Length: 220
Length: 220
View: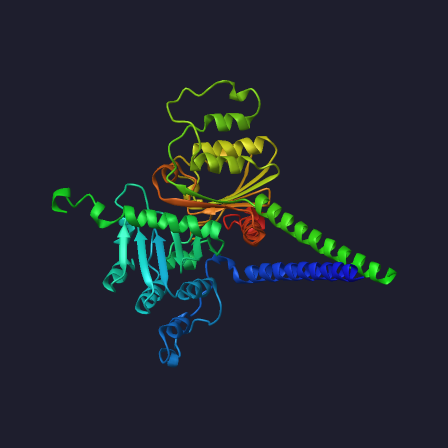
């Protein structure tokens, strides 16, 4: 009788453990799915005022003045992109062929002022064009490196806190945001984020100013 | 005694069912992970001969002649992109700002000849440039539609059999493939594929020739 009871208890304990494990696996799956951002943004973005979003991100007090501009308020592809970017707390890697959007430039400077480590890689032939944000970013003390190749540094991606990849066809220019058909993916799956992080580090090292050919090796 | 036995059996059956359910869930998860393609390709692509790949895809007999060119054989980003594209069996949607790569042009024509339904959307200002593949695709009987807007149709994506998205910074040009820093994601997650399919259908309808403004409404 004791043996049968013990067997029964063991069976019930096993069943309870299995049910618990199942529930835990389901909860983990749901949590992972809920936490993992997967978003697609299409452009052109509907015109919309992003002042409040940027002022709010700049800190308390800055949002006190409502923007007087006549643009409609509300969600659009640009404001969603800005929000993803402004979620950075520790680091931001940017690898962009062309960067002239004043709103995105302000967001990047704001993150730099907040203490986020910002690193920018860009294309040498495009960084000096009129309207480029690259000079302003450098002036603000943000590290920028560029290619010295004949081909274009044509990537258009950013990585937020080493875990969120923002990538697509969109150059960060007002022209592209307002007039072009463009796409941006926001991705947290490690299978995509990791190779892009590695690519950024590879390019960052390769574009180290000590490798620039216009410095002679004797002067190093 | 019978009641205890029945309870024990019920407990064991419950435990067995729970263990089975756990194993089934794990097997399903592994199967889903294995089946879902997730790939990142970076460019510039290492130079490599793609003749054998294209000849093999053209059908039996075509691959009999080995290519005499001096380029190295083997895997590279371009050959991987070609292989993904050539896996199409039913449909191929292409939405490309610039398309001049002869290898990718041959692959698309080959799929069209194989009976795959190919639809191409492109940018009006770039489709007529020297070296563009768009004229050849049209000549081969492939449906092509283009924008009539001031902004660029700047997407660079393709969808294979309605289930695999190929997207990134890469225009399908020899220049970009051989000289630029570029990225391409190959994705089968429905959260990404579905919005791009919808975007394609939206653009396809919008760029329907009956909407072209150079046809007067009275002549329709």
